[in-house]
Image (cartoon, rainbow, N blue to C red; front, side, top):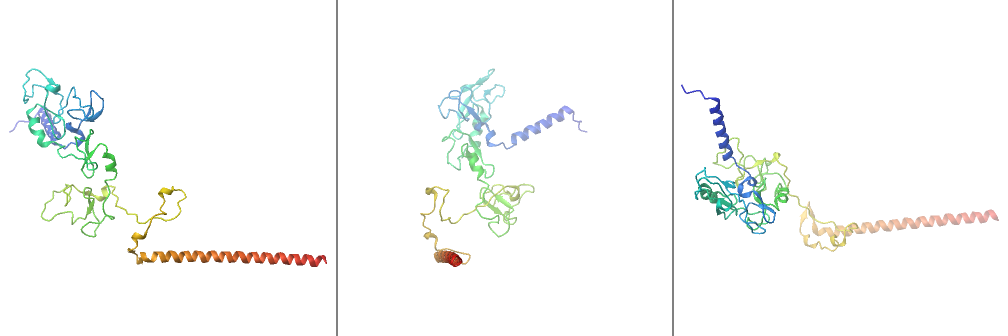
Length: 315
């Protein structure tokens, strides 16, 4: 019979499993050492973790490794390219290279030097809004929570505020007329339950279904606050009393959109409709003038009758 596990052994096994899960867990881009927040020792400006200050190009007194995140190399690990038995190294004695992608120091550990260049998370990091990379701006790099695209620190919140919007005007599937139950915020499109699954591909139960176009994990439309694209056609033409003259549309020419038809009404007949409406307004004005003239005539006749009666009574 196998020996019964003691409480200390069970605790050690649980701790090893927990550490393994933490190592294999996917960290966010803001928590990686190559994207740490750094404050320059000279100019005191905050920026992304990098070998040289983006603003004053000065060296850090205590650089941080962009792969393992340590500031001090201890001799007990034993995988250092430069042996320093019995002493702990910091500063430039700890570093071994500079990454070309994330521009951060890499320590002289064998594992960090051999692994980081191939697995650097900022290899193709370029902001999808301003098209700036790590070397063109001093801030940190983030990923959009919806479309998973790279964003710089300046465009992070502005992009995410407008990212939850579809390119279509409805929530219908792009391949059929059914309601799109799944949405991909990178392609800005919806898919029904039939067209989101590709033929010949097996999907794991309980896992999100990838987008058939870009491969990003789709999410259910009802779980997100998604808007559809709205188009505003036409402009109001009239006197804008509350708006400045430079924002009014009185001087715009609307003849360029005279070839469309909507709801059975052609745009060529719009001018005639406007002319007819103007004629109706003119007729109404004429009727009002005639009524006023008739009232004036009646008042004049009544006044004349009163004068005649007074004269007859006096005589």
